Every structure is written in C-alpha cells, then in structure tokens.
Image (cartoon, rainbow, N blue to C red; front, side, top):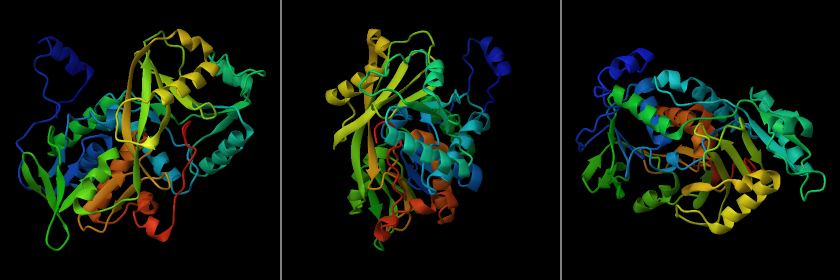
Length: 416
C-alpha cells in the first residue's frame, strides 16, 4: 500500500498527481471465498479490515450492490458519541470512540476526525433527570457527561438565542459530552476499503446479492448475484435497512422493522458552531461541517418504509423546532436533503450475532450506526473468525429475544 504523507504529496505534485496508486483493486469475481460480506458500508468494510488485520482471514469478498460507500455510510449526520445508559451498551460505544481516535493513524488516511464534544440543550426537567442518570452510568465506564448552566450553554453556542424564559419551552440547562465528535463519512469508507485491500480482501461494486443460498443440511452455502453464484462457508449480512430483504429469501424472520431517517444540510457559511448540538426536547440535532454547511437531523418517519427521501411533515417539524432555538437560521438556504433506511430491533439495540442458519452472521438494528463502525467491525470479525461472540457483544445476540432479555436503549438522540 502506498503511504500517504507530506512527502508523497509533494513527490506526486511533480507529476501532476498522475502516478498515485489506486486505493483498492477491482479484481474479477471468483466463485468461492472463505468469507462473503454483503454490504460495503462502514460496518461491512470494518469487518473485512479487522478480519484480515486481527485474524489473518484475507480470502474475503465484500459485495456491494452500488458503489462503495454509497449506502447509509453516505446518508448520516456523522456524529460519534458514547452517551448511553445500559451496562451492555456503554462499554461497546466507549470502545468505538477509542478506536475512532486512532483510526486515521492505523489506516494512514485522513478521516477528518474532530473530537469537538456534544452539548445537549435541555428544556424539560424529566429530560434533565434522564441525562444526569446517564452521567452517573457513563462515569463507571470512563465516558464523560458534565452539566453546565444556561449562561455557559449560551456562551459556548452564541447563535443559540431562542429558548428564553418566556418561550414555549425555556432552556433550563445543558449537558456536555466531551468524548463526542464527527468524522468524514466517505473517508471512513475509503480508508477502510484501502486498508482491507492492502491485506488482500476483494471489493466488488455493482454486485447486488439477489438471495442467500443454503445447503441441504440447512447451513449457508453462499449467495446468488447477477454475475453468478458465489460460495462461502461463512456469510455476513451487513446491509443496514435491507437486512430482512435478504434473510427472508431463506425463510429467516428477524425482530426488525425498517424506517426512513432523513437529514439535510444548509448552504455553506462561515464557521460559527464548533460543537455538535443536540436538542432532544425540540426534536433536532446539528453540527457544522468543515465545508461550512449545517448538517441537521430530526426524527424518523412515523411509518415503516424503505424510502430514501425526506418526508415533508418530518422536515417541517425539525425546522420549526430548530428555528425556535436558532431564529437566525431562517435566513439560511437549504442545499440538499436525503434519507436512509434503518432497521430497528424491538429494544432499539443492535444485533451482532449468529443465527439458526449455520455459517450466517448478522450485523443489524443499528440506530445511528456510524458511531459504531470500528467497534461493530471489530466484534463481528471476532465472531466470524472464532464463532464465539466478542465480550462487547455478548448481550447483542439474536437469542435475547427468545429469552426476553432485552437491552432497552431509548431516548438516545432528539428523535427517540
């Protein structure tokens, strides 16, 4: 793998940047691999990378129906955080933040990681009690949550001019999560793909999986694609909101429902917000990108859907809540909007697990899966390589629903 550095940048500038090595190969698709990973998003690519790096499994094909990094990894608001409540969730997301802190160095790729902190703007006392409860739980696992006054909140976010004493929901305080940050979504995908390719993993774009294949004994055999059947003893389904679309091809029903989550960005403006802002009582969250755009998110669609657009009612509710607290934003123009389909488990926690089909592994149910990309890939790779769950995901197994041993994580952002 060609090393990226200031010196390589200067050297290639002498040849008008015509001699850079391709970030990853495009080899012909073979008919058999040790492992097939369906989905070249963040979690699928991270799984391939850690399979090769940590376990030496390199005969791996990552199959993507579109272009690499074009799914939900490109359709999110890039927030990274570990402000969870449950003992099962906190260690996992704390680990993921720690991995993000060193990921750019490990990949030799600028992922534009900015650990700028997240501030929760609190407008109701029940929410304040909930966040202080999280603060105490997070402290056990080394993740920090700190209360701040209204005056300090407004000092850190000068554009927060709404929410005064006479408003519908006056601001009563805030909580700061210093560990939180953002990263560049496509840089995560490209860096992981480049790192996995360097170990010998193959990336196959424009290769949709039409169905899963089983042997006569019920175990997984491989996948069917328009380019022919591809066989493997181990197959991982890592396709975000389309998990059930594939598992139902072999009669496997999962406790998942798919919803559309939409977001939008403003025109670029001069930098004026240097933190991630979350307003759970008003139903929105935002940050400012390195290009100056405001990246804004709200609630999911109220109904199940595989759509990838934005629903007008959700958009209007998000904007109206935002303008109550940031009235100056009404002068901003909308630049673009998008939606992504996410699958939710019944307890709002992820599923990283084996299932009743031998050789088939699942990574799904991610609510805001971008923050979990490194830890999700690390733990799924461990599960595939050893057939035993990593300690961080023992509680996220599929059979928890048979035991009614739920990991209920609600109220994590402005939308739940």
